[in-house]
Image (cartoon, rainbow, N blue to C red; front, side):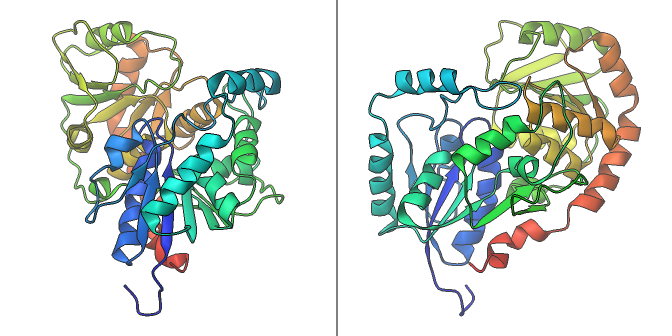
Length: 369
């Protein structure tokens, strides 16, 4: 660690719904450890197996008793206050008591109050920063929808994301958002912050991708509604391109699968290896996976959840020519997408050369830590 850097106690929060939030924090925790800081983590759900035992030195993990903020109900425009109030009353009658107990646990793990809190869409860690007066740095990718007046997508407005950010993270010392696409819309001057390249997990950044023309990776996240069930999607994929092999990673049970469809549970090393070698990806439109696909030059057919952020991400696939998107998968769409793989892959490589600058690899140092 640099001689002019004083070791600090750092709390890192990662939302545990899906894999994207913990993927970004893998990189940041590695950077913090390399610079000699003492780190503790708050996460839940998928974040626990993703972060547990993932670092050179052990990092304690505190798990909230429930997903903080999981009770918030949304409309197409923003927060549905009456429904969110009812959900909150039903979820935990103790009110804020669980949050103080979590704070106490974190202070014991760190040997004192945190000096700095990083949070990637994890509200409990932000509440601890507010409670204790710690420096708060947000690193979720959604903040670009607060910082910029992005257009409507999928029948939703940016307010769906901005409202949640204002509620859970109303103030931050630094607000850092990542983006796999250039953010070129009007700035909302009410909010300060900056947009950087996607923060990739170290195992992805170190990959040398290949292209197996017979392999297509499929990932459909369970954390939102899709208009077709998984069995139907697998059937459509099979008949769309019987000569290809579809490697499907899922957290949902599957009774059986067609002959050219391989179905397995989501496993990070296996998924990463398949992603590196495949010729294309069919997935829900989460930002982190799309970022990894751009970095590796992989074309994507996006199937967005019915939320603003995923519809917007899917729109960007077509805007920058790196893929296509659809609300429902049909054989002719799959065939058309696969026929254009080379064109989409070339555009993805061009976008990667533009977007990936290396600035995220020393983000901690750039923040004076």
